[in-house]
Image (cartoon, rainbow, N blue to C red; front, side):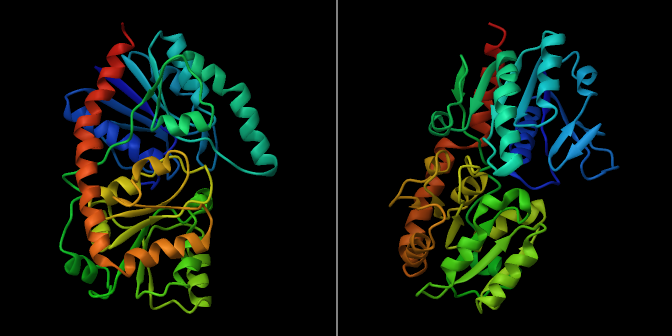
Length: 369
């Protein structure tokens, strides 16, 4: 099957949408499908990438881009798989599917939130553009029905297909060796956060995490993996709170080294503050690594954690709630280990990439029935 994946971001850019698109492409190719990825050339990458076409935008702003070339580049494929939202080009992918009579499958990642003029733009886009894109789609895939219901995602064929994780790559490892590789103390309870530190990822709640850590009664250290234009702000916040020696900023970790970051941890945290967070690939990576997760009680995000078995849910944006959950794990490492073991079992049973990609292919095939 010839499959075109259209995505607003793609590695080396760090982010959930790009990570899922990358996972889909790699796993589909492993099943001998012919897969091409189309994405904006935001980073002005010049090196040759097999199977990836980085198109020069007619106009770009943030992760939005207008790629008129999609209208011709997408001709001749069996399926077009659009990762949505893709402001500026989702409508072009839908038009191409209509023009060339190609089935369109949409993965709905998130409903963007903002205030002021940007918020108005998002609402207008959802009212005018999203209905057309969805009418062109044969199937709309959602990571959880919980998130789809909460945000009134409507389509005649909504299918819940959670994102997956490579359970052979993200595995439990030697905690002491992993901590040494990041310059961490080997005998101090360790919290890990993985995520973007740029303005686009304002909703990750890093400031809430730092404030919660400042109130912990247990011994702790924090590893923050990620980079962006707000990193210096968070570094200064850690300094102002007198936590410089406890908070370690690893910046962007190379792809091959990311599993080791989770292997450092006694507990992983995703303290998102609002519903811009829809799922949390990082929680899957932590689960597969045998690490329990503390996540915000948000639609979609909460679907990955079983409270009192694989982790904990906390009130979004609530420092006190997060502090209590962190103290529970940092102060009782036996509990953290037991929860992590349950998380690993659940990741392998329900979220293995190699299993979920077969379900994705089945959804492609249903488009031709």
